[in-house]
Image 1 (cartoon, helix red, strand yellow):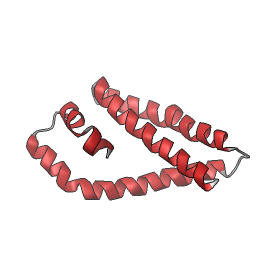
Image 2 (cartoon, one colour):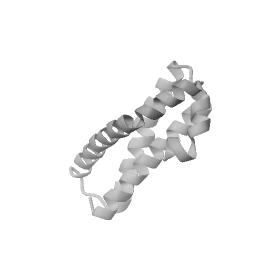
Image 3 (tube, helix red, strand yellow):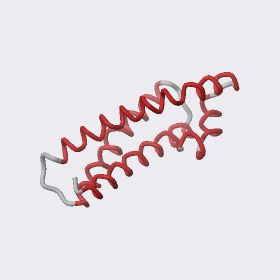
Length: 114
């Protein structure tokens, strides 16, 4: 949804994709969606492993998950985008995606009592 309905056009524009490249990416999107789900399951598993090692409350769960996003994922992403000479707009779109993903994970963990 993030790279589709919400930010499809601005994200593609910042990537400087041609229409042919956009069509090719769209054709590959089911495969990328599956890969993303697997990778996000790995991330969630790692976070659950960390959370399982310390006593915590729902507030601590949210702090650890969002702290991981802000303290680990975001700086890594910003450095990669910087070396690739990507625009600030693209960095912000991608950063927003990861914040949303980690917030969703935190919400699920809290709802499940993890």
